[in-house]
Structure formats: structure tokens, C-alpha cells
Image (tube, rainbow, N blue to C red):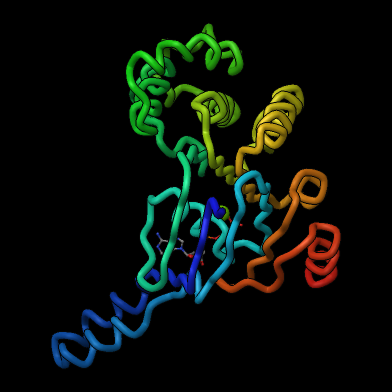
Length: 245
Ligand SMILES: Nc1ncnc2c1ncn2[C@@H]1O[C@H](COP(=O)(O)OP(=O)(O)OP(=O)(O)O)[C@@H](O)[C@H]1O
Ligand SMILES: [Mg+2]
């Protein structure tokens, strides 16, 4: 049984600087420039393979730009790889960059609905969970204001509350826990422990190595789009710390 499987996955983005430089050049030598452009892509993930079993809590660590958010976006299906295979078993509840999935002009309440629909729930299902979501977020007085008026911590609260109450089977968390205040962070942590106990598969991206070590059952270390190490947190995190020092 697997929840997530990456087989030789590569994801590249165009290099914009080269494209612009190439445009001038391209007037003269189009086909050559085009070939160079196609070749010259930035590899955000380069031949990455790993599996996550149901109920595992995987930590993804690595320096800025190493491909962690790209990995989560691929799991969530927001991005597609150019090369390789990705298999996902279970309903994914993504909690990606701050506010991703929220519409700034809609109110908090409307965004709860929007998110629920996007995650494939029916109106009735969302209605039955709405009160719980609102109570957890502690944002009741602000729920009829547009989300663009929220502070970043408030957006994170709403995002976590929605993602956590829609019965995820696979929960993706990208560095959002550090945004809430201490009290909300503690609440989130408790909720994550609940999920872990209930065998929800979790992929957590965090620069807080203490948190990764304390929470995750396994850690993957990414560097320049490739896996450097994959194993027990007590083995991988110290290696990473040493490399970063
Ligand atoms: N939409 C995009 N277009 C072009 N390049 C991108 C795009 N998204 C990401 N990249 C590049 O891909 C690489 C990996 O980015 P990614 O966001 O996955 O890193 P990360 O490990 O999450 O970093 P951080 O710790 O800063 O969040 C980076 O070099 C980034 O510049
Ligand atoms: Mg990131």
C-alpha cells in the first residue's frame, strides 16, 4: 500500500532572463534560439523518486529554492511533471502558500465554501462542518469581511482551519504553522497530533528542524531539486544541520 509515489519525477521551469535575451537574437536566428530556449530550462526537481505509506508523516527539508514547494504542488496536482510518474491514493487537502486557494475579494465565510467545493465536498457537507471550522479559526467577528483585509496570521488561521476540517486523507502543509501566534500554533500542533494518531498521511515542509524532528516519522532532504538523504529524522536532520553550518 502506498499513499504517494514519485517515480523519476522531473519538473522544470523556463528561464525568463534567457528568453528575453533570446528574443532579440531570435529575430536573426529563430530556430537556433528556440532550440536553446527549449534546452535551457531550470530544473526545480531532477529525477526524484520516493514513496510515502499511508499514515506516515514525512518531513521535507532543504534550503530555499531546493524544490520543496514544487514537490507539494505536484502532490496536490496543481503542477504536472514533464518527466516521470506520480501516483496519489486518497483525498489531498493542501495547505500551501499563504492564502493560495483563497479569493481576496470574497469574505472569509465565502472562502470556506469556495475551498470546500474545490476540494470536492458537497454544499451539505460544507454546511455541516462550517461551525467547527469557524470555531477553530476564532475569526467569527471577521468572517463577513473580505479576506484581503485579513492579516497574514488570520489568513493562515482560516487556511489551516479549512484544511484540517475537511477530512483529509493526505494533508500537505507548507511552512504555514509558523505564521499564527503562539496560542494558535499550539492548537495546530494538537490537531496535527490528532491526524497522526488517526493515520492521516502528512507531508510537512518546514525550516523548523526541531518541529520536523519532533513530529515526523521520516525525513527527505532536498538540495537543488534532488534527494540528498531519505530516512529517520534522528539520522537525516543532524546531517542536514552539519551541512548547513
Ligand atoms: N513558477 C515558477 N517559475 C519559474 N521558476 C520557479 C517557479 N516556481 C518555482 N521556481 C523555481 O524552482 C526552484 C524551486 O522552488 P521551490 O518553491 O520548490 O523551492 P522551496 O524548496 O519551496 O524553497 P523555499 O524554502 O524558499 O520555500 C526555485 O529555484 C524557484 O526559483
Ligand atoms: Mg517553498
